[in-house]
Image (cartoon, rainbow, N blue to C red; front, side, top):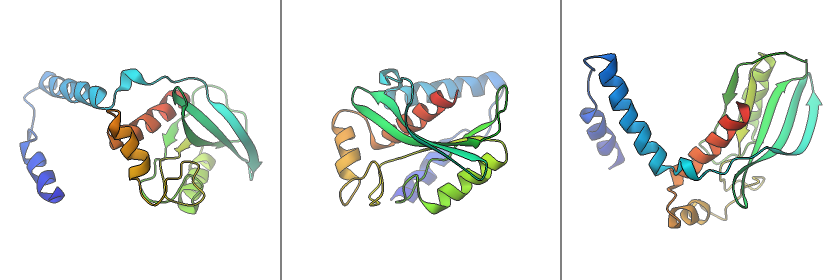
Length: 171
């Protein structure tokens, strides 16, 4: 079913745009829809609340909570080089899409490698059924994302909120 929907949506996408203005107009409509669907205007972002910080092998790892709304926080980790660097630095967000949490081995390895390369890396903790997750949901994702859906925030929007909180904090 989903494969058919994906193919149908892809077939409806314009194959090319007559001009840069046509592309911008198309993109503007998509961004407007995304902002509405994800209730971006309702995000209540604030400063990160640091929970812990460690330094190992020249990499600083900070564990923080990123405010998203009253009583709603996105746990996240920040990886960066321990050496002092002045000015802007390139950054990346590693959002996972599996049942692991932000402390899972594949994500940690990737984040540390990118930080060694000079990037500032933010890893949000999306809802997970993994036992060590700080956003653990019991048995399935319905108990976390289902609750979001009942207040008009689709499950995908919750992940978008997580990622936007990371982008804002990195900026």
